[in-house]
Image 1 (cartoon, one colour):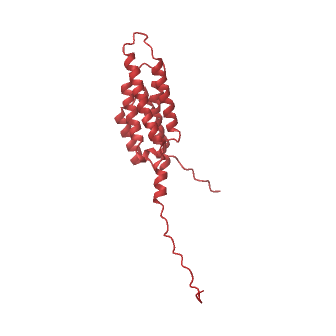
Image 2: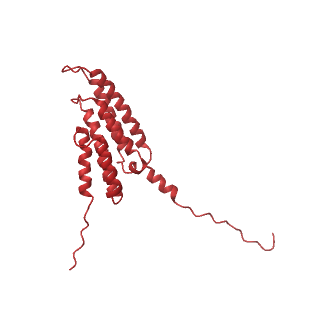
Image 3: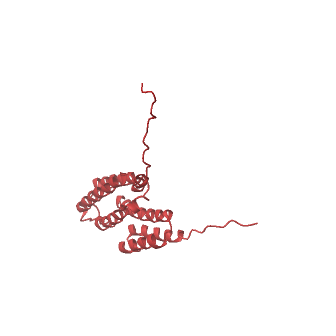
Length: 187
């Protein structure tokens, strides 16, 4: 009896490792943003073998960016927003490229809108406590980040380009001319 061949997912370990690196960005540990983006690029160009592998990379980077936002939206987070905001913007600017954007989850826009509302709510409830000297600046930075998040929410509301490109690339056969048969006798 012949045993069926098992297909080995060679990219699974690489994708899992990348996803860990992307999630560590929110914690400020692991790779720098430059290192993370280089790792993405190398895996995308040289190791990914198809759209499923590309989708896993985009999902990992997307979740890393969302983790930054989730962290900052927590009421107990009093970290400076600016550095995290720069990382988030760099990730999402990169994900807005057509080759990457097509792999974003369908509910990306909705999730971004919800997190923007959480950031605004946090800003509204920030109070001076524990000798926190820059709480007013923190409130302003949260609003600035929420604005940035809504820009990306708007961009992800648009139809994915891969679908539109497919429709435009489809060739349409030319129409045939209709000819009427000649009538004999000329009534």
